[in-house]
Image (cartoon, rainbow, N blue to C red):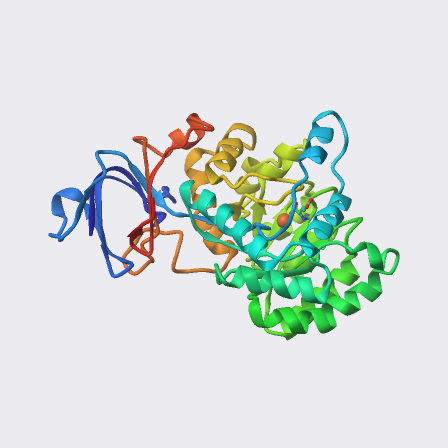
Length: 385
Ligand code: NIG
Ligand code: FE
């Protein structure tokens, strides 16, 4: 298949100062699920099937590196109370845990499929999914198993919060997480994550969780500095995490350490939007040399959007990113946060995960917030819409 007459192609193959590798009047040749050629439309090789992009923009499929899609119930009333002035507290997670424990596998699976369909329709072709609404061995095992049915990017987040039945016994709960829970979940997961934050897990507890996961062959990632500054960013860097996520409240030391590290900082604008917290200054972070990714953090508490275009619009409007930087962060940045070298870039040899926008340029993603601009999505070379 040849996609030709692409008005603006974002390849993410850096060309000089242009990290987006922007090409005009371009074409992409796809064969057997992979990109095999990228170049000027005028030089395009012949192909059996031709797709005329009509001068519109093509970007890599979004790589959403942070989501919580397997859960029961919702927390619309908590959101409404928050909009009326109540503060977000991670304690709300426990109400989703109760609803998740009583949901059947089929209920959870159906819900999960619904979220994946809405994500695909908005251009997401790779998604990471976390457990963390089970918080007992059997339910956490169900959540990672269900997630593994739909993505290779499965994260064990048994250390999301301390469940009610372990109240005031956080260390005992950590023993459960790094013992029988990890044994049950590790076979289904690629990543281990922990919510390192006041009200969730201390740095010492978080380190135990991450080290136990690493010893079981999982790679670390961390939720940190969402509700206030803390040592989670430093811990993530210390254990070699692929990504540390949130970073709403960063110190100068955090920023310098991130810039000097291989750890990606994944910003989650849907969280600040939905919890009415201050947006992080992505401009300053990028200028300081931090590698920034953008993700949705789809979950029923702090960010119930599944829209990468929405996150891009907020990142441009309120976090100081250019549209080029925001699209990079939502594609190549997400791939870096998942240590993937086969997605997030449009180049020969990469997976053919592509999005055709109903717009002449990627700027329209931020310029036309809330408007469905995804005209087609190819995942592994197959048209999905
Ligand atoms: O990524 N930070 C912790 N976990 C989720 C919030 C989950 C919830 O409120 O249900 C997050 O924001
Ligand atoms: Fe999260």
